[in-house]
Image (tube, rainbow, N blue to C red; front, side, top):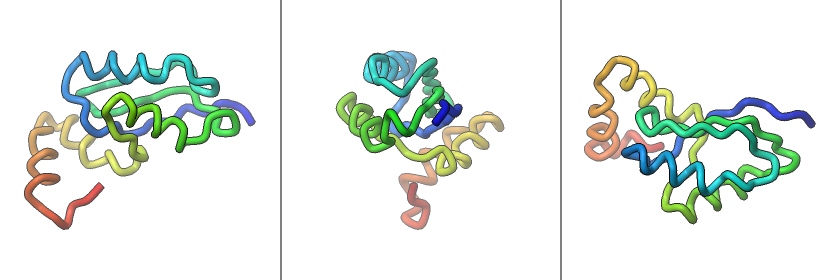
Length: 102
């Protein structure tokens, strides 16, 4: 199976240091190449070969660094709010409305 470009939401990233921590955590994983972390969007994007690197293994490595890996589709609200320049609403929604769960 060939590599595919994939984006995941990474919960807990707040600053450039968080980006660096994520990149350090995944840099030596076989099956993941060209990783890019973006704390503003809360994402990790990379070329991913699922047959060589199960998503569970990636999630475990991210968790060891103190973050939580989630699927890209669950971060659509955050991405939309970031593009609109009102990403502070994301935290408000998550923390104040129990019905919104990622």
